[in-house]
View 1 (cartoon, rainbow, N blue to C red):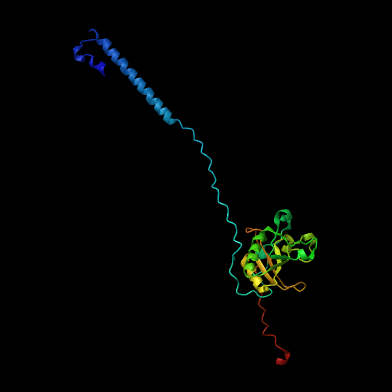
View 2 (cartoon, rainbow, N blue to C red):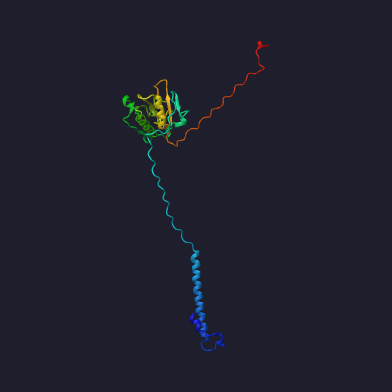
Length: 262
């Protein structure tokens, strides 16, 4: 600093009584003290500002990634390979219908929300010819719509005509089917065809994606193909019953012999 160069060397002063000696040293001491104080204040303010936490920045809400809509289902090609055979009184998959399509659930069934009207000029509907007011074979459960469309298209490729004899039947007006029939929920169809054997129709119905297909030969009504579906893909199914092993017959007591064998 320039003012330090003006301060006389200590050896030139015999004491502070000499002229300007005390004034020069006192001014230097004051300036040095002032600089030290300012530096201390700056250091303290810097430390204090570092110690304070910065307010957390508001994080922008994560924008949920919009998943692209699922592509429409393919209704022109089979979803399963054709079975090798489909004889009368057989069904796919093996077992009871309730294990493939689930039980009826009228408590959660809503005709207004669950039923749709199916229209296709390539299909013959029995209710259009019988003219029975309480029967309308165009009404089906919405879960039936995709496999039914696929079946109609597959039959058209083979120049077959589909006939629907039984669709939705209201439980309170049901006179033919059992109370547990999926027809009462619109999830079952009874089908035939005049231009195709029922074996071929059953195979195509299985390829079309129905959850249960039965080549049925009832005693009271005509032979037909019965098809049904689950209420939804994730609908729970009842657990399968395990077959209990049949106990082996106890062998006859060897000690028991006929009286004539004596």
